[in-house]
Image (tube, rainbow, N blue to C red):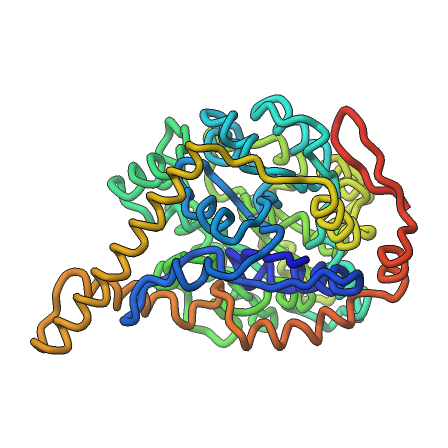
Length: 460
């Protein structure tokens, strides 16, 4: 048996999937990690090559029937069951069509044999919005939170000498002009009525002003500005080029959390990981967001204005540390079943159960979709190869070769793209996280699978 983990963001998903893979390997199930996206290069389009090997289950961080049909073809060519792990589960209603496939419920139900969710919040959405049966939903908790907690327990906390603050961006929508915003809403079926891109642009400009002001007043405090994957780093060119401000985006997110005294954000869901690592998170009231952008999870936010922000930085400068309230951490449990306890193990056991009990249910329509995508991928491959050959022969750019080269340059070296080096370095770290107790539990079957109206729970 073999499990394939598709990785959309290597900085956030590689370590978690490797940990789960180690547990699977202990019961005779091999695993591999592969990039979620397919890539262009001078050697063509790599769909056919990367979908030629057999797999028994394919773990997808996201799946949309209309937008990502190539993932269905990948699964069918590999003869794999498709499992949705839902990398983004804290969502607002404007994204239901994209994230929950509300307009393709029948196909969604047929393609995905199981869903792994963090808690009853997302389970309820799948049941009520996508008509997913509870027996297809495994409530496992959030494995990223277990990894964060394990790593945090290995580090010294409450260090008054630590004067590093982490600012987590979720401003990538602010990079879009009106045309790009319209295209984004269309491609991702985002039912926003407001110009959310403008709201995030204004908020980011205000953040730059706050940071410049604070950094100039408290030069002993280190401000680490972590940009969002895909965000334009040039957007922060107006930040003072001082020694106590750094703009980063290619480091491991968990490492950044570990090295921070506290965390600031606008509306990022990174607060979940920060809270379980016992890091205080303040939400910066930079610009009022429209109601349609706000989700139920906003109840976890702790908003502060600029004066409060400056006062907090002053306290950091004076060696004062901050911790989140117990009430806030308890509220977190509403979204994350079991907190961060044994979620990696629950995911591994759920995969094992999927392999033992689930089968694919593809029909003729799916076969036609598969054939169409295979043909299209062959056409893309031949077009790119021919265009590059023509460019090399004539020493003249053409549209297709330029497109392939630019896409490849954007992908190669991108920190969110999975690489062999990333896999190798991550394995050593993952082996330190998985305990012998967890291996014993899955090997000896010391767990029970409990079915409820919300979904399937795994008890120890």
